[in-house]
Amino acid sequence: MTLHADASLLVVNKPPGLAAVPGGWETGEPSLFEQLQAEYGKLWIVHRLDKVASGVILFARAAAAHRTLSLLFETRAVNKTYHAILCGLPAWQERLARHPLRLDSGHRHRTVVDPRRGKPSETAFRLLERFAAHALAEAAPATGRTHQIRAHAAALGFPLLGDALYGAPPTDLISRPALHALSLSFEFEGRRYDFTAPYPADFEEALSRLRGSLASE
Image 1 (spheres, rainbow, N blue to C red):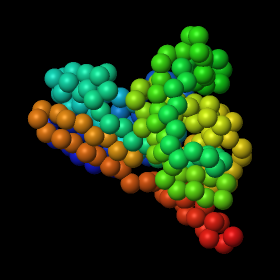
Image 2 (cartoon, one colour; image 1 turned 135 degrees about the vertical axis):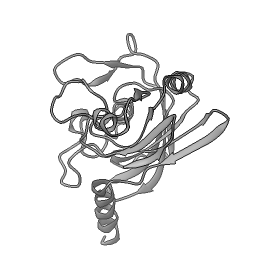
Image 3 (cartoon, rainbow, N blue to C red; image 1 turned 45 degrees about the vertical axis):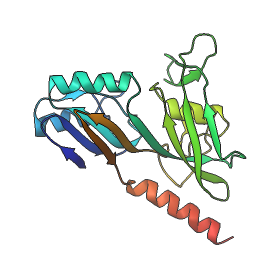
């Protein structure tokens, strides 16, 4: 799970289904943050991942590092790359989604497109692989809204595989939205950092089955 640890940074590959940080709408087992603090000592939260998502997440191990890293995220100096499996086959190869997004406080806790009250949001999508009725896409969010990639993909008409909250049809390919935080890249204290997290087993299995279905046609 741990990808990197030093006096300033802790980077891990978060498993799907585990809350990244305490709080939120659901209670249950300790969050990833709480589990890591028990192992590594005092940590600071720099950014977040959806509970359903897997992949790279960064924590600070010192207050000074936390201030610097938070500023990097605020000024969009961190490159974030996600991989997602989309329902449907887009006609485009690349698409920039700029739908303004607003967190809906209703009982479903969705993020909705709202041109009037939504916050500016931007996600660049690029197709990596096409299957019979799905596609593997790279998603690079320039902003960090809650459920941003999921909401933007749905707004384009291609919700994430397994993402019933945003309109995806039922599937037996994966039991959660197919979203993986693949990599983080940034400059910190004069050094370049590039972290990549391998796919979890359920994401790999979904891709394998999609490739198998395509090969059998």
